[in-house]
Structure formats: C-alpha cells, structure tokens
Image (cartoon, rainbow, N blue to C red):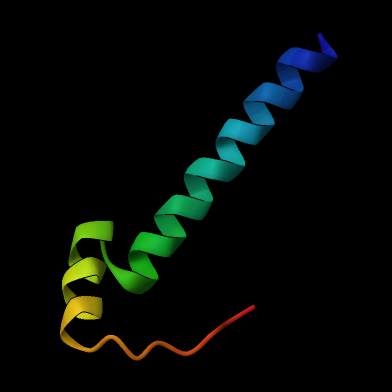
Length: 45
C-alpha cells in the first residue's frame, strides 16, 4: 500500500514540475529554438 502511494505521489510531483517548467520556459522544443538563437544562458539553482 505504501509503495503504491509513493509511486502516485512521485507521478503527481513530476507532472506538476513539468507543467510549471513549461509555463515558465515554454515547451522543450520552444526553448531549444530560443537557446539555439541566443546560446547564453545563466546558471540557476
């Protein structure tokens, strides 16, 4: 039972993290185009 809950929680966190990333940066394809045009990118934590 605990393992099933842990898996469900992991999936939920990963999904929300991806959605937040897309909201902030756009889709991976969109960001790739931007990075190719202006390849300077500040490091972040």
